[in-house]
Length: 475
Image (cartoon, rainbow, N blue to C red; front, side, top):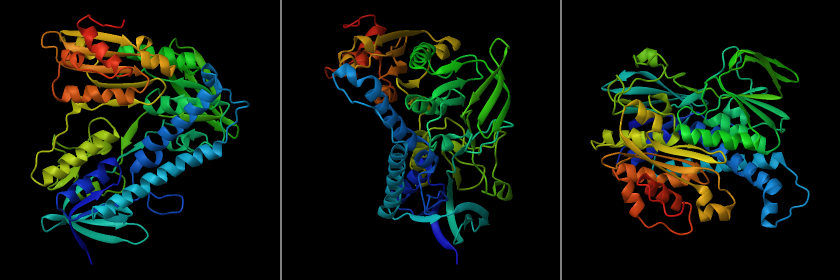
């Protein structure tokens, strides 16, 4: 017998589980379907982010940063550690434990908010009585009936043509998190967020890492000045980064992987590595939804077509997160999930794409919100820029991490903040002040006039805002 719900969410990642909880808070009878499994076959909600993305990668980044500090930086503080050793199994086990805590936390939140959870793959059956029949495929098949459907099925790693993932030698983000022995040589194709973060993890743990990037510029989406500073820092650390390459072939053997490519000057080269991480983007995941069967419209990239409110072409069917247009970011998915739940309830959900922060959790961290200097130049907008280096920040000196800067971009006439870009310590935390400021249409002068604690890294934010008017106090 079919089970009745007001809202059924397909997918339990950041967009899906948050949408389900918010809909339940608004008084709807809600179900969430998710098929992720843990190593024992049990439910593991949280999607790519929790299971093989944001959460485990940050765990490994933290562990590898501790390892590097112990090996190279503790001595600067007068701390001796003797012979350094690495228990990789324990390091990976800690990561897995953190993932499980997050899985269990989501299941608890479902229970707390009275969201019915179904473990399996959700797919459309047909429209019925102004609503939808949804099938849950899995160990115990179920059929649900609902008025509203929210699709939050996320994305999958994009494979390099001719080099499918085997998760042993050619790795996606999933396999990159589960390497059981530090490789002597590691190749990374793609210098985006995943490539740089995973490359950083394994470099810190002892691998010789080479990053191959097809584009001629490094981190093209990042403000150019910030990207150059990051490139300099990564190169100094030992990451070898080649830009403008054209890969012709990837060969695997029992001993590793060979990548044959042309460099930026057209010269033939080959890279032989023990493992190869491919991080060239992600593709929307609509596998098994039966989109064609019910006429759900997809675009030429395979993403679900939605309007500004995340409505699809089907009545009462919505889609959020990586499976639709816009940046593939967990927090963007969450905001869309909340907004859709509120729209279903007749409220006015709000998502401002221009104030969605971006973060790369390398060391130094890179974070930004709003427009870059090159974007402002391209649109011909008059602007003022102000920068402040962490080298001149007292807290950064005390931390022993003075790499990077904060950069403000403001309208030349109104002084409204148009973009804030940070490369340096704890950029992921510092960017929040800029997000709040931009959401409330603040000016650079507003930030410059706000008292910031001393000594703190946030003083660099204040000083960069002062720099817009050429009146820094500490540089």
